[in-house]
Length: 159
Image (cartoon, rainbow, N blue to C red; front, side, top):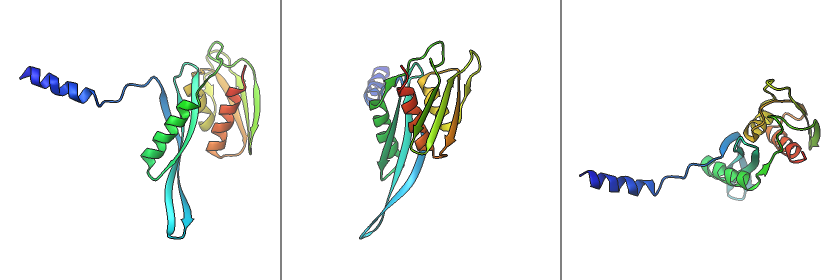
């Protein structure tokens, strides 16, 4: 009897997802629609940030008929767009000022122990990148997706 139960467990283990080293955070989900001859085509978009909290981070955007599929597409794209952020003692090396579309992002290295002083969209990218101490300010756009992409570009421009 015990041997039979072990065989069953082995069968289920084949179908379990492997545990990923990356953490995903869904920043935004939107319902979008397209006008067609037959009526409105409704879909969903998802913006996802993925990172290992050890200096690698990526951002992805997915669109599909269902929310779950949109999130899965966004996760795949986020993992494809990953890059390594140069982190020095838990913070970045220098101050940055990046303009992307209608948003300006100011990012400065924080003192040791100051923590993440950052707004929502910036915080999600920086947190998953593994940065511990940082000070940031969003000027201009309140659009989450624009601010996430601006932060992503700012971190990518670090040397």
